[in-house]
Image (tube, rainbow over the protein chains, first blue to last red):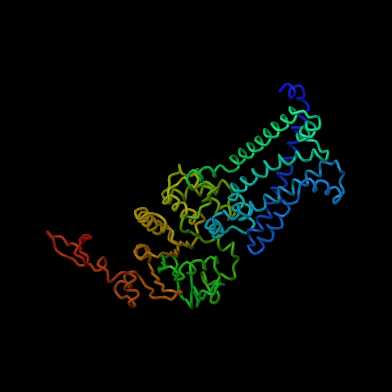
Length: 215
Length: 269
């Protein structure tokens, strides 16, 4: 604890860095995965193929991906962009299937009633299907957020500093305290992300609690 | 006036839902399609607002073919009430009703005002306005469904087994309410049910359907009870049952109505 306090500036700096490196892929992954999931839901025949390919992305081992990415897209080896892109790919891989399930969870009767009252297709998708898919989308996003926060650490191995740098540094110096600080800070960050998502969900979907308590 | 002209409908999987169905529904009356499941009654109803397109034949509203109209605009001009109400679970009661008006281009405040007015018309207290549908009972949800159907003051109201999912007591309450609304509002109502008693309670014109959308009989409840077209109709409306074979007995100077089993069911007024 004394070590953490003495190095609080570094801990805080890496905490923020880690937070940003996690937040961007979570948001981007969510934004990209929702249309893919929607498409897969709308085209049942292509669903298997689309989701299969997207899920396959998750099987790429993270370290090789981080090493290969700069070669493929021409970014510098130490650029944080590599980590952001790799983690966005993983986020999409996890989220796309959940997004498809989320749209599948929307009651067909409600969608039918909305069509019958005169919702045009685009309006139906954005103001009925998307919000009703919300609770399942949120559940998926929480998984993505935890997974992303932990994966950001790996960036430390290729020189993109984050809380993971405490692991690499502590390991090299055989200094356990530093590793423990890294682990605790990562867990705290993951919990914070989860809390923020849950709170945002409550704000954006006040109706969800009423539906759940009735079900 | 709604007119079906030799309508046929075969679904993609090959099931023939309706074959050469023709019918005229006069304006400002209630027509009830009644039959067991698979008789094509819902399919016929949904052709009016183009939720289903016929394979052949035409549906006309006031002599205009609905096929020539824009689906979305057509649906917005027709009220639709379905089983389980079909309310949007993420919108409050008042928003569920005003959303139809918003789709029709009303300003937000105006839509809200009108929505509250319609909710009152269907007998729902304003205190429910800000609740979510899941916080209402089945009967209350159905009232909101009716309010939504009426919000835009459409000429035509389509009702697809609207009271099928509520308990018998609430159902009767809603039926009485609909009779009252119809007296006040004078809409052209097309109502689908599998319950012949409900059909008799609400319909000016009853259309009894057999499998495959074949018409067994069209007529007023009185027509059907006094001269059923065939044995199918006779048994469908329950004319062979004790509850429909009533007779009058004199008791203590009053005329008591007694059913086929000799059970008292009412008195002549």
